[in-house]
Length: 327
Image (cartoon, rainbow, N blue to C red; front, side, top):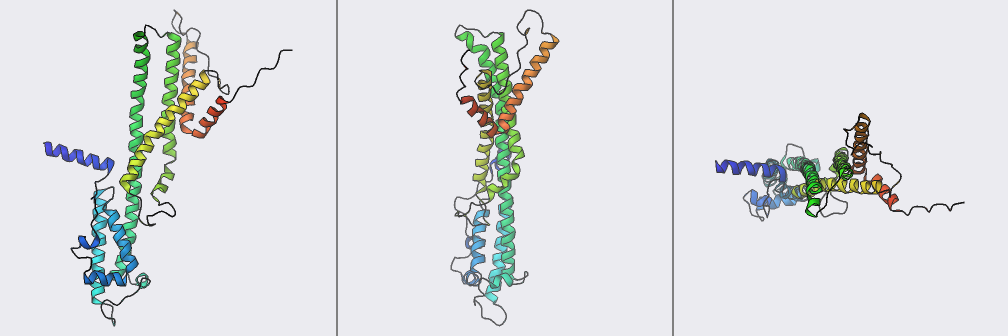
């Protein structure tokens, strides 16, 4: 029972955070049980130096793959291709002695059924599978971060309500009906900021796949993607960070608008009979609903479009023009 639970926990952890790769990846020679100076491997290196170097880089990257089965499948395919290339290099082409170099360019024109042709074909396939694995790692990490931010949002809202309700009596104070209305409006704006931030990330997911491409002039070759586990970690942080940014932008706009500092947008007036002794009228209910939609929309736009929110915040921080002198 305990081992099964640990296995399930490990499987869930691998699904969320990626498979733990070896600290020191095995070389292609070690995976084949050969020494680095093995004659067959040396002949293949002389015949196809560029392709073998590319295969070795991809083999090392496959051992850091986000999904274990993807890394294992890529490693097996590359090892089989190298083994076939060693056999052909040891046999030698017709009319040429074993070990005679065919040159780096000759491998491009070799038939796909030969060992060297298979080496290149398997390297191309490995590069594509590792790129897809890195894209999967980035997408899964981003979704995990957004989910964490979404789950955290109601927790923060409940804590804010709890603080507004129970903290003032601890300091011999009380929160009245108008203050409760302002608190509720601020929390509606706060929640709208989280929703806008999540929606903003979702509509921009088409640009997230550019993260798997190495930066120009970087140390990684073009066909070896970034470390997928590190990419997933970065995208997790980016996911919940965007939700937090939505919170702060929405809260900042609420303070600026409700405090009268930013006069571009005018909040709807509170219902006149909101805090009266009689029940709230139909017009009061409509005014209350309108205020909720207003603050929720402000928060949503703040989280959705950071540039718009930053522009409003800057305008709110500008000094207000002086009133004209009275005649």
